[in-house]
Image (cartoon, rainbow, N blue to C red; front, side, top):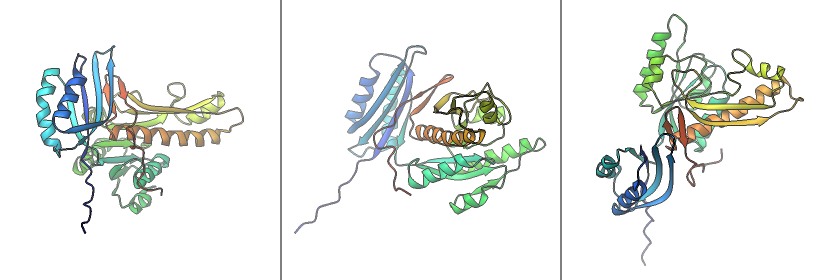
Amino acid sequence: MSSALPEVTPPQFALTVSCPSARGIVAAIATFLADKGCNIVDSQQFDDAYTGKFFMRISFESQEGKSLSVLSDDFTSVAEGLQMSYDFHDISQKMKVVLMVSRFGHCLNDLLYRSRIGAVPIDIVAVISNHLDYQKLVVNHDIPFHYIKVTKANKVEAEARQMQIIEETGAELVVLARYMQVLSDEMCQKMTGRIINIHHSFLPSFKGANPYKQAYERGVKLIGATAHYVTTDLDEGPIIEQDTVRITHAQSPEDYVSLGRDVEAQVLSRAVHAHIHRRSFLNGARTIVFPASPGSYASERMG
């Protein structure tokens, strides 16, 4: 009596490509993958007529067991002929992420939970804060917590320590989960395309303190949030995700804050999801964000 061998799942990879628009790009990529024993399971593309650039993301199985390094090396001949920037990614590898937070904890709590159940599959390698409010929470998740006080006098030293943590942990992404300090131009430039921020969408109408109270006093009927890549232009980087929630005259200023808190957490998690699955591409001051691949929202567990 023979026992059946366990079914082996082929390695799951993704290929991301950006290049000048040209004829034959899709055919060249599809032919290459087929010749290397790979099966495409999901493919999305966009040809930007305004910038003349082409963007593509492909999920595929390496059915003959070709490794990422072999595929990447062999793809060079295809890429050079079409002036491509490209990367091959192992879908099973979780991206290393550093979270930064101040005193508003809703986005931090949301990402900790989504990470724990696998809904946003990231490896949170550190949490950095300029306050101690969430130290116990973070430590209870077995995540290193770094308290770095920031003042006008020590801002340069504090940011140098932050960068040291980011580099030592090997973090590929930094998420400002309501971190209420302005980053320097130097840090923004060094981390281009690798820092995501979240804020309410009342800008530029309601700046400064208590934007939700200002919105209430003006009778605003939509509350929204924006997640974007951080640049040297404060709160004006390329937008990844946005959403809104409707309100009425019956809501109080406290309702505005509560509803705003919820939409901020949802928008930030969706932006992080897009980035870690390599669905988001910088396109000048804009972004190209492809829809999620089938199965990429599935959680490992419910709680």
